[in-house]
Image (cartoon, rainbow, N blue to C red; front, side):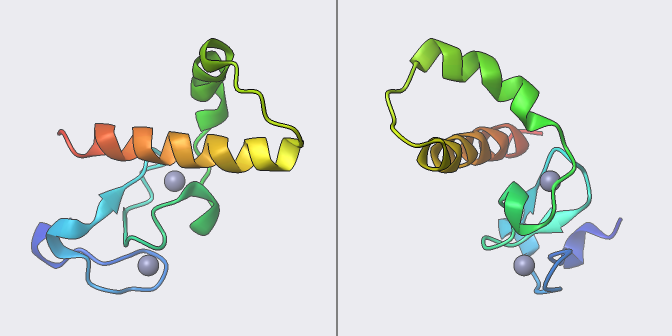
Length: 85
Ligand SMILES: [Zn+2]
Ligand SMILES: [Zn+2]
């Protein structure tokens, strides 16, 4: 992999040092495509997040809203991990 010209796997935009790597290891992603639902992520991050959700026990009405929040939480978690090689 040529690390000096990282490009987003989805839009092919140059991401340089601001690129994001996902746990699915498909490659680099820009800010807009770093989220699992934005690049068709295949990593089973739900398994990982289940424990966290149980601990936080969020009171949210409507499964859709809860799923949205879960995705955001996990994305931040993935990014935090990806930032420290
Ligand atoms: Zn992109
Ligand atoms: Zn992914």
